[in-house]
Image 1 (tube, helix red, strand yellow):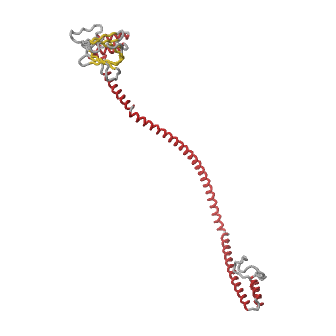
Image 2 (image 1 turned 135 degrees about the horizontal axis):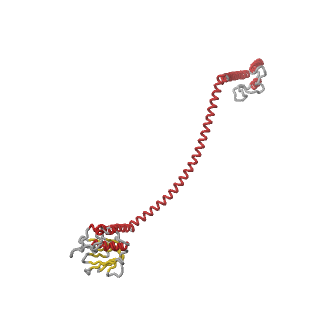
Image 3 (image 1 turned 90 degrees about the vertical axis):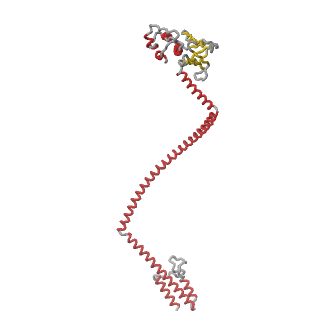
Length: 365
């Protein structure tokens, strides 16, 4: 029985192994592991046979052999299933290869490859253009950074200058406050005084018969004083001679009333002087005006003519003609030019000399 089982087992193993010797004899690889590793589900056939031969002639040996045969059958079945799965995968791969090898699929793949190649070329050109733009933008960024640094430097310089100007402004404000407290107030008062003096000067120049700077010598004084004098005409006749130390001063040095009958006028064309003598014996006594030239002398004579102390205007014309080197027709009025050769008739006794406004008008300039 043991020999029959051995022959049957060898026949089965020979059929599975292709008619040759058993690949599992002599301590071969484990059954059920395609790579010969001991991790599979196979059994060691040689070990089973040796175990069976060691228990020959007993009932347990047959049970052991049957168990090994059952395990061997299970392993063979698993190997068959694995082989069938591999064959199915091989068939699927073959079908895929056959479908790829068709001409239509090849053309489609070629078209897709061509489109992909064109798209890649376009992408390369776009990438180059973007790279060029990027380089330009980087250069522009570098220039902008330099410009920003220059602006920052300018801003720092301006801030430094602004700080200096602010400090200067604060110093000037402090000085201004100091000036407001003292010197500026004094200067404002001086300006106000000068404005008032200018108004007084304009009033004296425009409302006087004669005005100007002359040297005055009073009877009580030993020397001449340069003063600003003005001769004002009064509505009642005559006038007032006022002398000021400066043209804009408000207080006069002296004032003298000049009027026909109360004062006498002595003039000297040789030294251009005019002496006013007070006949009443009061006041300043006599006042001597020393003019700067014949024009100034004629101006003061004209002023005294307007207030009535000079009776004949021809005297003034004679002085002017003597210094001009000849008679000038514009220095005489039309009436005087028509009656130049005839002396004027004396006024009636006891009456004041008559001088009309038309006769004096040309000489008010």
